[in-house]
Length: 234
Image (cartoon, rainbow, N blue to C red; front, side, top):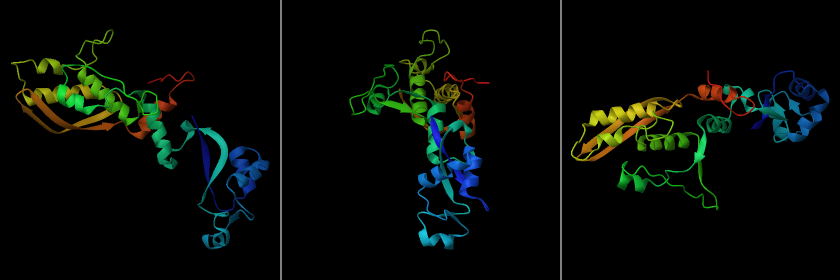
C-alpha cells in the first residue's frame, strides 16, 4: 500500500527548495505546482495575501501534496490522517470472510450449535470484514468454539459449552471469568471490561467493552512485516 506525502510550507521556502527537499530534484517543482493547481507566485507570506487567489496560493503552515508515493510505514503518527490510521488498522487487525453477520441466529441458538455461515456483500461476492470488525468476529468465533475442538490448536476456543450443561447451571462469575479469559487470548486486544451480565435459568446475557491495542502498537505490527507480508513479532 502507498500514500502521497504531504509537506507543510515553512517560512522562507520556495517551490524549488521544497522539490529539492522532498523529491531530491529541484526541477520537480513544476510537477508539485501542477499537482496542487497552484499559480504564480505560488507561496505568499500571509493569509491576507492569499485571499486574492485563495484556491491557487499557499502560505506558511499550509499543506501541499508531494506527488510521489511513500510507504505508509514511513508516516509520522502525529501527522496521519484518519484515513491513514484506518488503513493501518486494516493491516494490523487483519481481514477475513464475514461469518457472523446474523445476530438473530446467535440470539436464538446460543453457543451450542457452534455453527458459522458465510454472508454475501449484495454485489455477487462473499462479504469480508477487516480491522475492528474482524476482531469482533474473531471473538465470537473463539467463544463459540469448544476448547480443543480445533485440530492442531488445543488451546483455541472456550469452555463455555461446559458451563451450560443441562442441569448444571454455573454462577455468573464463572461464566464472566471464562469470557474475559477467552477474549484476552487475542493478541490484538489490550484490555476487556464487563459492563453487565445476568443469568436466569440457562439463559445468560452480558455486555463487554473491549480495548484494542493502540495505533502505535498497530503501526509496529505493520512496519515489522517482511517483504513477503508476514509479521515479524518480537
